Image (spheres, rainbow, N blue to C red):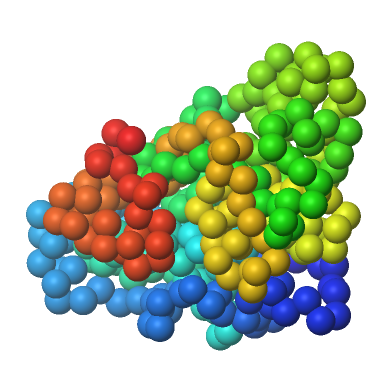
Length: 316
C-alpha cells in the first residue's frame, strides 16, 4: 500500500506503530507488542497439520491461483491484526489464523499485501484466494464475495493523551476533522455511505444537534491516519477496536481510546469468491476445527485480541 506519509521528527511513538506500506514498501519497525516469534509469509505444512488435514475437505487445485498454496490478500498496515515486521514479513493475529488454516488444509501460505480500498477487486480479479484483513461483514460486501465470520470488533476513537478536544460524545466531533482509512466501515459511518445512509451516519447526529458535519479525512493506510492525529491535523482517529487498543498500548503514552464511544460491534469475515464454494467450505471447516480445539483462542490471546473471539463460523 504505497501512500505518502506525514513524517514528524522526534515522534518516536509513530515508529513503534507505523508499518510498511502495502505494495513494494521498504522494511519498517516491527510492532512492539508482537510475539517474539512470528510466522514467515510463506510457511510449509507441519506433520501435525497434515494429520488435521485428513479430516478436512480437500481444496481443488482449480480453486487456487497456485496449486498447493493458499494466497491471502491482507492490508498489512493494520496492527495487531496484520502488519509487516522489520524483515517485511507479514505478522499479526489474522496472519497467524490464515497460516494455521492453510496448514490444516495441507497448503503453504503466501501473503499478498494489498490496499484495503481495492482488496475485494484484487480477490475477484484473481490476485489471491482469500481475504483476511479485518473486513467487517456488510451487506454491500456480501453481494460481491462470500464471507466467513471469524472475529468481532467495534468501531473506536483514538485521541491524543488527555483528550485535549474534550470529546465525550459523537456530537463533540461535529465541525471537527476525523481521520479514517479509506474503504473502511468507519469512513462509511461518518459519511453515510456503504451500509450507512444520511439518516444513520454519524453526521446525522450533528444535523439533529444543529451542528456542522464532521469533516472526514481519509488515508490509504490506517497508520497514516494515526500520524495525522499525532501531528494534530485531526482530533481523532476512527478505527477498529483492536487496532485502537494496539495504538494506545504501543504509542509511548501519546494516545488514549474513548471506550464510551465504541460503537457498532460486529463480525469480521474471511472473504472468498462466490465461484469457489469448495475453497470456502474448506476454510470454514478448518476455522471451526481451530475454534473447537482451542488453537483459535490461543492465537488471538497471543496478540491480545481475544475479546473479539467468536464461538463458531456462524459468527458471534
